Image (cartoon, rainbow over all chains, first blue to last red):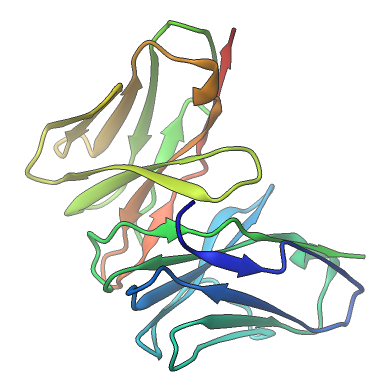
Length: 114
Length: 111
């Protein structure tokens, strides 16, 4: 158990809908990262927050947005969902925001868009 | 951005044998990390090796880094069925604070 929690574990929804994925980092970790993992794209970095502020942006679509709250939990919002958004979404956390930080991954949310 | 590419894509061995997987990357890095992912689960950090280190050990894991060849290898000795997983190398991006993961090596250890 990494100490990172994600809810829900599974999510099934329809095209065009909007969903919110939630992540609670390990106690004391200030950075939260979001990743998308699909069979054809592999593990793709989406976005990073550090202590409430956006720190780095990866291959995140404009339909997706995220935020980190004062209690350091984070939410990833996915809107206007398409079939291709079906994937595993992982949250990871690290103590700081350095390049040598180990990232601790949550169990993931499996999103299925029908 | 840098990207690690693992090789081979898939590897199947018998229990007790050693497994070696490689990672190549494109530009200079100051560290490289290896992670393991069991099917459908979150990634688990295995080991970090810094650019000034050539070799590092952790239990049955041995990681090497050759910065001149821009490559790293992960050796798992005396493999067990529980080692069956995908293994990823991760390299930091040049300007940001995040990592880029390679496509991974799928290791199957047969009993």
